[in-house]
Length: 208
Image (cartoon, rainbow, N blue to C red; front, side, top):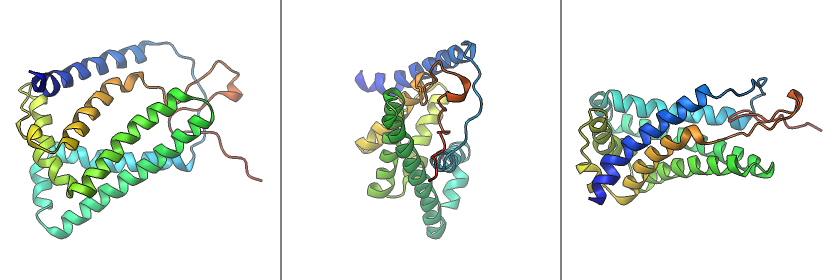
């Protein structure tokens, strides 16, 4: 019963929460803020996230094509290296922005960055300690996600996987569910010149 709730119910509950939170954010009337300059950490987050999300989406949309690509050890190593580089870039950027938010006293934003960072680091652990993260993803996670998308949840393969993979997948789903409610950069009621930046943009550091 507990496994059924974890793997078959929580993902749909998280999807409903995401939908409700997204609608609430879209309908909320928040004052427009001027664009803020991007820092190297923000650009690093964007670059790392783009690499990781691209690989995840390709694997989900065309798993057989990625399996054929991974049939060559050289190509598999290249793909794993690319994914690891993206995850490390994303980790560094999230850590830098999270520490900046903490120094500014924006603890809610710092906790939000820490939650995302923990998920990324868990993925790095799977890639390094268990090896071939793309193989685990294609043969365990993708079938589970596709079963959820077809409204016929089947977590048989996921339940047989190592515990760290189960936790990583479920925690990622829950994190997506609460994503609309996370505040990565609080905007206090100040004059436009002193508005706090958002997720990727932070104040430019003064040069001596």
